[in-house]
Length: 620
Image 1 (spheres, rainbow, N blue to C red):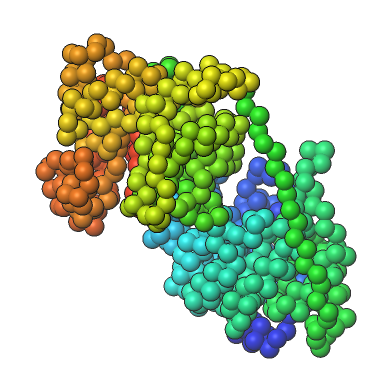
Image 2 (cartoon, rainbow, N blue to C red):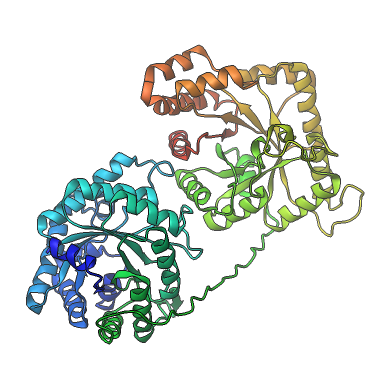
């Protein structure tokens, strides 16, 4: 059957596959909180009935009820030890349904996403990811599946490992299907062109798209994928439109007739396999079957107009209460802040994936840098807004004074407040001479201590720099920079005292690698100005390798890394990142007596390291 499948898709024949399994099982009374895959054992009749109905509707391929039968998802239900049994039962149920129909129908072993985040935006390694997929795919192949379908994956890294696992675990044909968001990109920001090219390079026998939105969007994506990989074979399985919640139920608006119309368009666009995903039923499959049967020789029909649908989002109105970060520091709860840089282009997908990982690990606030190293990036306050709305974690806006005159400073502060941003970290900012546009204006009207005063003694009292009312007071929580190992301690103490006097609420330090640097500087400050009671978030920049440590120590002003740390990183070799995490956790535990929290600056987008450190220090 595997050979026959490859021959059919090479002969320009368009196959009809099935529709949604979950939708149909739910209609049988199965609650969405149950493990659908386990029904292969506890309620095989319901699963078999779904297969039967799709075959009767005209499906020439059915997918096993094993979408979530992988080690990670099954373990959440306490079913990890039944992986082989559940996958085998899924294939056997599909086989029996085919035998009872007396039709030639392919049985595809269905493999869905693992349900976890993988490196670099999660802590499951690529090797672990591949091994998990291999375990399920091997079980499906051994049970007698004709081919493997890997579907509904939105992370291209994960899909690549799944395809590699399939190629290494069996000799069956492999279908690789990605899902996209409303903006025709994956959750990590990859467009259809890149997806098609990479999946074709990985050796998938068929590539395509499923789930996502309705037929209109998937037709558009299919066209882009085919243009990027014209020699590839494609499959497409759209949802029955975007889901809506009506009366407590999830409803899909696209009816069966609509799917029949689009079946012809998919065929014309070059799809070798057509089916349905969430919300589709045997009626949708029957409609597509009937439409294709009207044109047995050719799908050459006039192209349909592809319409793009827009969406609007409401701006959140924020109550005038202290930010969650401000409240934590007031309550003297140890806090974790992690710095992220805005994207260089329009896509925020990877940034949001990293922010979600950090929030899930326990980070209390995401700091968004503003044009770090004077390189052009998306506006930091726009990113703060997106992260806060879509991830739900508190944010701190880095607000440089460099490159802003007094009008721009005040206008940007008002805009930030209107977007619900309450935490502001005031810095000078990097000189434009080192960045993308060295000739750009580099002037400024305010130094950081002056901006702190403008915010705390002006905007937060309801007036601007000239004393004119701004309608109502702002509620900014203002942070400032602190160098714990300055080349000129007296000057640093003068600047620190000025920031304290002007109203700074908290301090973020430069990267620190010695626990006693802070107490030494604070002793000098207190000897001159009295007790220092403002929260300090100690800067932590996790080391990744010996080369990384050597560069920071020798080439970055103000950073000193002890010999012991460098030697431990050196001895670790390829395990440098692991030792970097250990060093960071040890340092943080040593500093907990005098810091209010930590401010992590993970380099090379190693948010997985930051998440691991966060979990480790939050347990104590």
